[in-house]
Image (tube, rainbow, N blue to C red; front, side):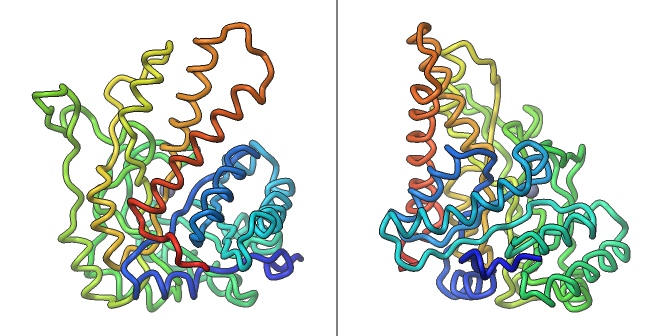
Length: 333
Ligand SMILES: [Zn+2]
């Protein structure tokens, strides 16, 4: 048993309280490798933004959970080295799908876990979530739960159809489970293909897809039922068209990839939404940078010469999200 406190990490409780009161959101960036982690920490340290490092089940399988935990511990030290005196860093399990997985993360030094039982019938979702909460809270680890189903595919999470969170359920759910934050479904979606072309309209000038707007009425209803309760948005990448264009111009093939417009995320961040998950955008930034090097310098075979530019591009993206979309810069001085 390793406590996250020994690793210098924090849970989400204070962070979320301040974010809800201050009308901004904490970035939750997924990571699978060193370059992503370096870019996240550099961007957070430079902007003094609290940050949530997210590890999915897929990332654990890819990178090894022991290694990821030591990387997070190293991230705290690295942040200090970069001049961030009191780093506010959370290590969070994204989409835990069983009690055993969540328990193992709590035992391994995670400071926060998500139990996603949203695909189960309502009463089963409550029972499993409560079981995780009861265990995690013994160690002061915070728990995110989910109500409603997001569409899209990312790692091992996938659903064909989404259905919005039912606001009439949230009080009962939050009270009976004791969860610390709640992921809701208001039309965001996982992956780089968040919407089918038939769900979108097309901008006549650019020919690009314009996605349907988020269901802010559902969000406001939830806020009314649970005033001040931390709300989480998954599937909130914006799929920047400049990255899609670079990828497509250098041999890639991502037709009609589309995400959530940043204005809508900015709007959501001002409300009770206090955690916004971003994964696909960093994948796109990384892929765009790597493809460009491979295309322009076919003789290059030093990984530092393509993973280095990829890291720089991701850092730029993370800083943009922190400063211009979530508003979390300067909130962890
Ligand atoms: Zn998610």
